[in-house]
Image 1: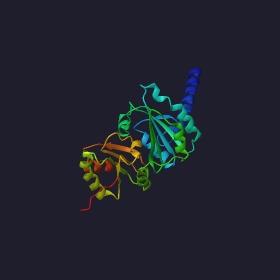
Image 2: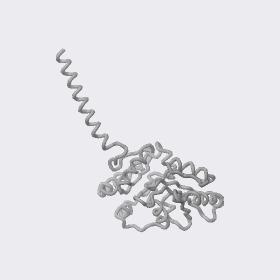
Image 3: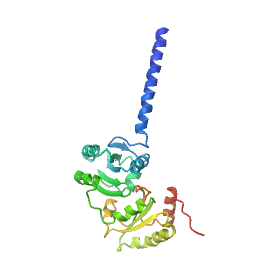
Image 4: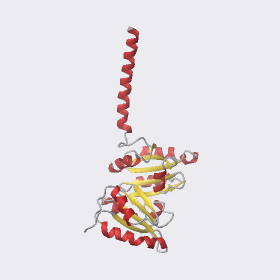
Length: 255
């Protein structure tokens, strides 16, 4: 009987120790805190995690890969080493593309690996498909690269602390012209609450970094520059209203 009690007490002690360990670890793994370099995130928690990093003025690297394509992980270790070298100003997260279809779709990921570099108050500054240029990423981290044409328009909007609607279009695109009145009306009604930018893909190189493969392409950003949604034709005025209201933006028309 005494032996049984002794064993039970020991088990209780071990369970208390295990609980304490898990409690301490939760502070490091809770979605509001940064994870280890290269840690996997999903579409349920990535926004909260990245928001915290950007608010802490950190560059964020998003790495889309697939468990089905072993080659898609070839750049993970070199990137992890690079991030650890600059861990005071950059974080790195992996997103499994097949298990996070919604996030994969709104970021327009078609190949793996696909990598996005997000900078505070600027949004996406570079993206890479398949071939990951580590030298260029390091220059971006150290702010030694040139800004792309069109990037300053987006950055100015993000720096203002408002969500953005990016209308990627072309003059020769019939459906772009069909959608344009809805964009202009939305800007006229709510331009004080939402940054509305029209970006011509024939002149603004930044469209490539947002992986715009066809036009019209409407990309919705939150106030920190994270992609929240993406639409093509025939999305219009009411769709934009619903999306920004979902983000908590108070949109009311006068009268």
